[in-house]
Every structure is written in structure tokens, then in C-alpha cells.
Image 1: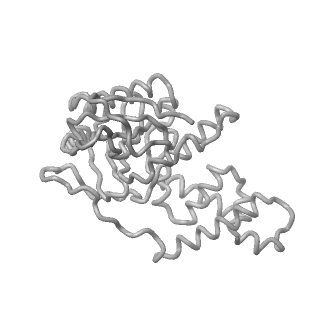
Image 2 (image 1 turned 60 degrees about the vertical axis):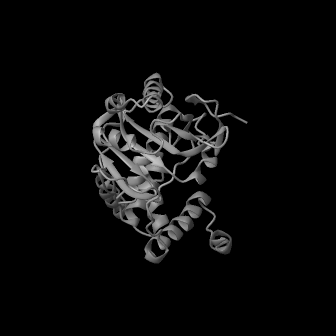
Image 3 (image 1 turned 120 degrees about the horizontal axis):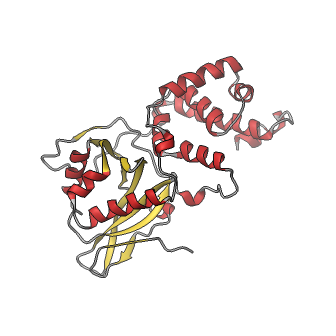
Amino acid sequence: MSAWRALERFDGRSLRAWLYRIATNRCLNFLRDETRRPQSVLIAEPVPKGDGGLVSSDEPWWLEPYPDALIDDAAASPEARYDSRESIALSFIAGLQRLPARQRAVLVLRDVLGFSASEVAGILGTTATSVNSALVRARSGLPPDGRPDLVPLPRSSIETDILDRFIHALEYGNVEQLVALLTQDAKLIMPPEPLECHGARAIAEFIQQRSFWGQQLTFVRTRVNNQPAFGYYRPDPHSSISRAGGLMVLTLGEDKITTLTRFGDKGILARCGLPRTVAFDGSARSREPRRG
């Protein structure tokens, strides 16, 4: 609507840059309005006594997953696919939320969308020097997430093996296997719950205390933000189906898991190609989602 109203002011040069200028400035105006930002939420599941590993989280609790099915990189070069994978990873998106609005805009326009410094200056109504300065500050403001070259490639045998072993640990309630799959400084975050858990042992013990631990779960695999993920389903004691418990996303580093992101909002399942219920036949299972 804003672009339509401003159409007569289009200078006839780069339509892409002109549209991004409108969209970027609308987003910046939104971020400046504190009253329109998402407000805090209640914890979805009570924290049982003894969860000493839980601490308040400063992660953006409104973060939501982006299904890989909506990412079309089939024709992209290997370099472009790598850049795309890095720019939509949950850790990158979470890191963006900690940056000032203008630095965030510069980082996205330059590093994600590929605009030149002069183009970004035109979009933001500033100078190329100011853009370059903001980009340096934005890059340094992102939290370190390890070496990207050590992250297993999407759908590689290493990634698949880690996911297989993680699901196996949950299926059979194997705490030690779960601990072995996590880095010592691993982190569990649970948007929209404003809590997180640090450390392999603490995370394993926290998961062990969940109501689904020890049940015959069904797992349906998917991918979001170019990362392995799965929906987990708990059997309904009153019927022959299993109901969705949530979505778990794994962030990997080398051959271990550095971050677990658990989304408890059932509303996101359909967007990720996952059903709300699956048939239950009395045994724990792991399977791929049905297509079409």
C-alpha cells in the first residue's frame, strides 16, 4: 500500500532498491515504536522443582522457525547456498535482535540482500561512509557462534547421523547418549518461554524431567532455517493417535549439538509441513513427513 501511494515519486531507476527503501523505513518506524513491540508471555509449562539449570533468557522469545520448503536455492551457486544458510540460521536471526535498529537494517541490506554501500545509503537516506561504519559495528555486535566452516553441510551424512542419534536417545530415554551429543557449553532455548538452560548435563536432566520423557514418542522429521528439526508426538491415552508436543531444531557444530531450540506453539507446525496428530501403533517411531 505504501509503495502504491508513493508510485508517482518513483524515479524510474532501481525498482528493487526503491521498494526496499519503503519496506526498510516502515520496519524502522515500527521498531522505534516501543508500544507495538511484542510483550512478555507466561511460561507455557510449569517449571518443576529442581530445575536448577534454568535461567532467564535474553533470546528473542518471539523468534519463529522458517521452513526450508520455502527456500528455493536449487539454482544457486555453492557460495550463494552457503551465504543463504548462514543468513537464515536461528543463531544469526537471534543475534540480529540485539543490534540497534539501524545497524540491523544495514547488516541485512548489505550482508543478506547484497546491496552495495551506495545503494544502502540511498535506501536509508545517509552516506556510504556511514553505512560502512554501521556495518562494522553490526558485525562486531553479533555474538560469536563458532567457525561456520565446521558446521556440517545440510543433509550430509554427519548431520543425519547426529539427528538419528539424538532421536534415538529420546526414544529410549538414554541420558548419557544425550549428554554425549551436546557440547559442554550447549544451550537450550524455548521460545516463547523466557527461559534457557546451559550445559550438556543440565540440559539432559531438564529434558528428562519433561512430561513426555519415557513415553512412546513418534518423531516426524523436517528442516527449518537450513537446520535439522523434528516434530515430536505424544500418545493420547484415550485414542489411537499421538498429539504434537512441539518442534525441536538442532544447531550443530562439527559432530555435536551446540543449541537446541524448542518451539512449543502448535500453530507453527502446519507452516513447517507437520501434522497436529499422527497415528499411533504402540511403538516409538521416527519418520519423514509425507509429501504432497
